[in-house]
Structures are given as C-alpha cells and as structure tokens.
Image (cartoon, rainbow, N blue to C red):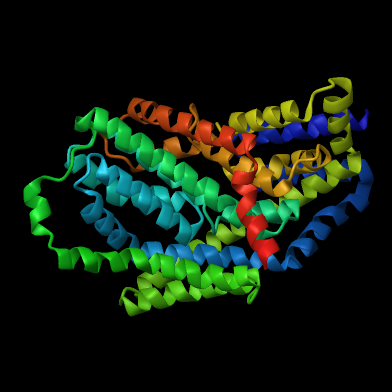
Length: 442
C-alpha cells in the first residue's frame, strides 16, 4: 500500500471514529498510535512519548490555564452582570439598543475570557431573559447572542489563537494583535446590522420607555461606567507590558489571572464556591486541551513521516494545477463543512498537519491565515445542521424559542460574517497592519 493510501485511510478512520461520538483526543490518538505501531513496529511507541515530552517543554502552554482561570473568575463572580446593567442603562433609549449593548457585552467578555462558551452562557442567562421581557423579537436576540459569543475566539486573549500559535509555531502576540481589528470590525458590522434593522422595523427592538429612563439618574449612569472600566483595566494590565516587551506571554497571563482574582476580592465576590468552581473548571478544560494537543502532535508526526503533506501539495499544485487562492478557498470551505459536527479545537488539530505547511508553501502569511481560520470557525459554529453554538443555544434557551427559531436567527449574522471573511481575505492588512506596526515600531 502506498503512503498516500495509508494517509487517506488514517484520515478516514479518524473521521469515522469522530462521527461515532468518541472523544476527540481518543479518536485522533488511537488512530495515530495504531498506525505508528503498524508502520514502524515497537519503534512507533516513541511517537506518543515524544509528543508528551514536547508538550511538557512547551513553556507558552502555561498561558492556557491562566487565561481560562481569569475568565471563570470574572464569570463566576458575576462581574458580567454589572457589565450588562451598564449597557442596559446607556444603550436602552436607542431602538435595538439593548441588543447593541449585548454585542458590547460580548466583546468585553471576550477580552476577559477568550472562549466562546463563556459568552454564550452569560448571554443566554443574563441578556436573553431581559430582552424577551422587554419585547424584543426572539429570533433577533437569539441570533445576536450566538453571533456575539463567537467573538470570544477572535478577540484577544483568544485561547484558540494560542493553540493555533503553538501548532503553527507563530508568535502568540502577533496573532492576538492580528485578531483585534477583524474582531472589532465584525462586532461593528453586527451593531450596524442591528441598528439598521431596528430602525426599519422598530418592533424588533423597542427602546426603553421614557418612564424607565427617568428613573435612572445621571449619577447612577456615571457609577455604572466603572463596571465597564474594570474589564478594560484587567485587559490592559495584562496586555500592555507584554506588547511593550516588559513581560513574556506567560508572565502576562499570570498578571491577568491575578488581576481578575484581586478584582473579585475587592468587590467581595471571591467566595469559596466561586474559587472552587473556577479552579475545577480550569483544570477540566486545561487537561482536555492538553490531551487533544498530545494526540494531534502524534497524528501529525505519523503524517509527516508518511510524506502526506508533500503528496497533498503535489496533488493540488501539480496534478490539478490549482492556483494558490483556489486552494485557500477550498480549505476554508472544508472548515465550514467540518464545523457542522466538530468544535474549533478538533478542526484545528485534525487539519493542522496538512493545511499549515501547505499554506506556508503557497506563500501566504501564517499569522493572517490564523485569523482566516478563526473567522471561518466562527461561521462553522453557527452553520446547520450541527453547528456548535446552535445546540448550546438550544440547551440554554427557554422553551418558547424553538430549534426553527434558532436556525432562522443566524442567517443574517452568518451573512455578515461571510462578508467579514471575504474582506479579510481580500485585504490582508486588516489583520496584519496592527502587529506589523507595533512590532516594527518597538
């Protein structure tokens, strides 16, 4: 059997195991281990051992538990509740203002957490009941929360971009900076869509009535602004010394985790329950990521040993004679397809051994491609029939919101995200300008 057929068999076996509902690291790792033993005998047992040792020596991996802990502390201590109250008061008088405020809430939650699941949980438990109570259209707000929560994997400190940086061997700081403008641009496009739609059809997002606005004085409005300042203080306390070169990425992540912890202590919300929940959740998610990375590294080592990457490159560029941009678009379409039944981490570790070397060979910037991958993942999260966010919303939404409502709600937001993806593909400087400017300036 040729090496190309072996590679195809490995990939097919892995996808089949994933479709049966096996855990991601189990499916990838099992195929890698069995293939290594079948190809190289007992010598193949060195591959998983080598992957574990590489992981243990991967110093930037320490950033993952720090960022995850920071996000859970801020979430479990209910600081997000204060944020929503701020947006509720300041944006309420505008048609669709509470939905716009929800997008703002999601951006700040993203800057605190780096995971889309946290944004979805906060949006569904805090914003959704309030918006329904105030007469907002259920399809509109369901789409708002799903789209807004997806920003968590693009706006720094994105955990997904940290994983991409580790696998692609690219600087995490540059990837984070590359995600800033595309993330804010996408959030701005969501806001524009909501505002225009609610101006055309005010019933979709009614403004707060005059009586309720009158009950909130100027002093209370100004006091609520401190709720929005706190996450910004945490974010800049973490990012500023890193960007200036005063601290390493790992040290900055520790600063962020400690600042979040102290903020919860100062606000007298760091109870034993909050601390225990945050630590347990951090441990569970960190271990999950580590198992997946080890499995992916083992799988990639077998693939590399087979020469599968070179075979795929020759297939696209020589046999099919496809242009680099055609190959890039096909790769993004494959991400959309996989996103209907896999999460972002699984997609990355499955195709990273194939796509990242190919992208580099085609002459594209790997930092820019990291942003494209992340945006495509956001779209895949919301694409039927099995988009990750669709089922998260179904699990958290009240019974009055049906699966049909959830599917229908994401159509305009997916269209906005596809437009954002196209703009970032057509104009790479949207993503690359900020990291190039900062790193070249300093």
